[in-house]
Image (tube, rainbow, N blue to C red; front, side, top):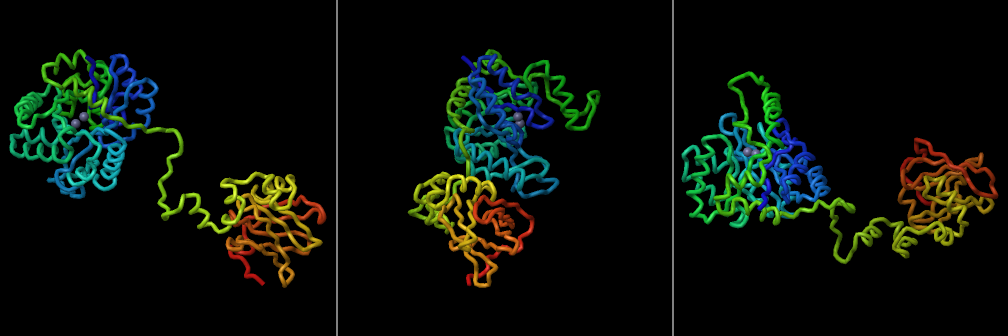
Length: 438
Ligand SMILES: [Zn+2]
Ligand SMILES: [Zn+2]
């Protein structure tokens, strides 16, 4: 029978985990494991890369985090009471769980940071949906209480975790490293288990890929803590066992504990998060009842209401605009090019008018000379957008682009026959407001 590592730190557990994601996934595959979890310390920065590499290697990705739990409230910051946070292993079972993990990771950095990114019990309880939780490593809440001899407190917290996560989603976690307290903890968990009909899982607190990586891990920890390898009293891993142990090795250690190996496979099966990189992931924008996003947009944007856009339910083609605007296709295309590729413009100076069509409304629009002989204005909803045009004595027309509101100089080369040429200038001589109608 195989085994899945559900407690694994990658290099994204900064200065703590040493395993490169690619190497870890390759090793899982080599060891014949069907899946692998990512549970970095207080962060999910590695999740996207991990998901992609897993998918490419046909390894089931299990998205998790080893979060930090504040001993009191997540905003409490007392140097004595709040400095040490507990570890907390969480795995996402589904999309809801994944979103909750993101919220936990974000809130812990933005609101709960004090020495480490922390959430508190209330925040955790409010975001427990879709998550699997375990008793955790020696630095987690329940193990600490057990090892420090506070057994009734440990039981109180076990009750709390079962209540918050549900019977099916809370597991007793067993690890095997060379730490005396760990043996004490495992023994206590075994004794407590019958009372809760607890389910076990075996993990290995993976921090690197192979046994020989231990030396590098040790150096990494020295960098983290600003110490030297030769120093005696420094923080270090207890032994060289924090690598990706094989299924055989895990079975040798925990095969005697009913469910401890099997449950890692069952959890891997249960955790289904698809980050689905296909398509757009835009935020949902609620629209009033009876509207689709498309129809609501028309309502909000007046010039779209009557145009070809609505009629067709899509952007019209140049030919359709040409027909609706009474223009030739060439005019539409050249006009688009010139006025920010948005507008077809034709000047008919003899009739004192400019014909204009745009790809959104495609309503043929006529600009006429205002009574003062200077201003031209649009006989359509565009004037709400500050469209106006001025015909200068030298035949130059100034207008405002309805989209960027920059002034556009339309230079008339030949009064009788378009095309016109247009250049954009930085300032808007008319401001952003349309002149009032005559
Ligand atoms: Zn831990
Ligand atoms: Zn850990």
